[in-house]
Amino acid sequence: MKNSKNRYGGNPFKAMMKNVNLCSRTANCKRDTGVVTEIISEHKSIRNGFEQGTILPNGEELTRGLKVSKSGGFYRDIKKRDINIDHIYLEKQFKKQKGMCYWVPHYRIDLNQIFIANSVLAPSVDRLDGDEGYVKGNVVITTRFVNLGRNRDNDEVRFRDFLDEMFGKPVKIEKYI
Image (cartoon, rainbow, N blue to C red; front, top):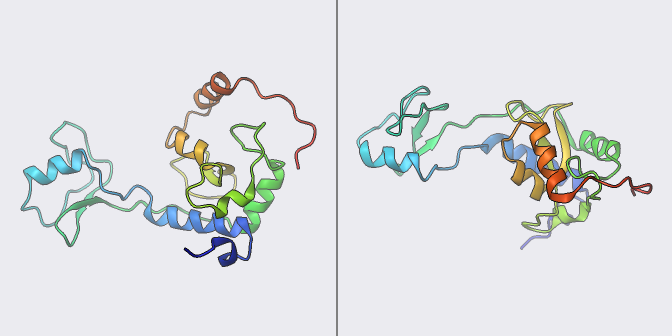
């Protein structure tokens, strides 16, 4: 296994940007094992996929089209995300947050965790508004654990209430870094 720390010159913000770029190209295009499997079983002869707005067998409407892969399976259309940030912007955002997690402000993020495969403690770039891209003013630094937990929940008040209930109100910390 290659050492990702060497690949990015030890710069965790460049490593985070790699994740942002990857995420923006592949966001939400993984196979859906539930509804898509149901469609495949009923429509094996479909060659062109399904348009956005198609009503599925379970009564839901497709919010994005489904395309047919070379192997005959279905996958969701890729919804590309706008990106106008870079690793320098992420470093400034991290300093603005004083090295702390945006959502759990008493938790100090260890940047070296980005170089450890599958670490839930790794810094992660989170979009405040999931409908928008990775654009200035819409991204914060959190941990992979929190970002995965928050997923597509755009209700900031509800998420903060949940974190307060789970972890208690944060204590003011005088020394950050």
